[in-house]
Image (cartoon, rainbow, N blue to C red):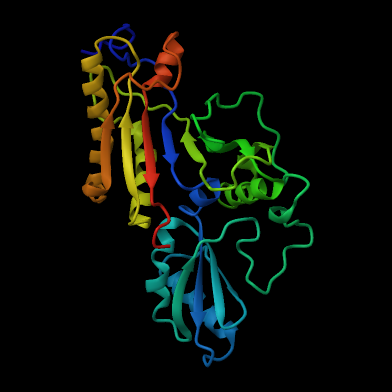
Length: 328
C-alpha cells in the first residue's frame, strides 16, 4: 500500500516529476500540425474574381465563430485560410462547403514562419526564410539560466521539452536547415518568444522526424489513490484533441512508479494510474480500442532511484502516439 503523503514507502506521492508525451514517428514540426494547420480551398475557375470568394469565405467563417482566421487569395483559384487551431480546422470544410465559388476543399498542414503566406505572396521585407538557411540557426530568445533537466531517451537524437508554456529544442540535427524547419514550426504555433533553440548540428544524425516531445510538467497522484488529479486535465484534454483530430492515431499510456516499497503493489498502482488517464480520454469521447494501457511499476526508471527528488521524477505517466499523420 502507498504511505500517507510525506512518508517514505511504496511510490510515495510527494513532489512531481516530468510526465512524458512521446510522439513516435514525427518530430517537433509534425507535433505542431496538431494545433496549427492551414486550410486550402480549391475554388471553381469560373467563379469570378478571387476577392469575392475571399469575402464570402470570411463572412462564412465569421458567422461560424472563427473570426480570427485569415483568408488570402492565391494562384489557380485557391484561397488559403490560416491562423486556425486544431479544433476549428476540423470545422472548415463544413463551413466553406456552402460558399459560392468554393469547389473542392483540401486540408494541408503547413509549418514554418511563412506558413500563412499564400503561394504567390512574398515574406515580409524584414523577415528571412530561415528554413532554407544552411549556415546558421534562426534566432530564438536566449534560454533562461534554469532549463528543464530531462535526459534524451535511449536511441533518440533530438526532442522538445515543454514546460510552463515554453518549448526547449535539444539534441542533434543533421543541418541548420533541418533544425530551422523544426524551430520555425514551433514558433508558428507557440510564438517566437516561447521557443528556445538548444540544437547542435551533427551531420551524421538522422534527418527523419523521429524526435520525441516530453511534457515536463508534474503528474502527481495523491497517496494511495489512482484518481486523476485536476492538474492533469489540461494535458489530458490535449490528448483528447489529438485523438479526435487524427482518427488513425493509436495511443499507449504507460504508468511508472519509483522503486520504494513492494514491487507487486507498485505494478498494480502503475496500471491503475494509467487506466485512470485512459478513462478520462474515453469519457471525453475517445474510442477505447485506440488506447492501450501498460503498467511498468518501478522496472523502467527515467532517473536513478538514489534520491528523493529522482524518485519523485520516476512517478510518472508516459504517452506515446503512433500513426499520427496517417490519412493526412
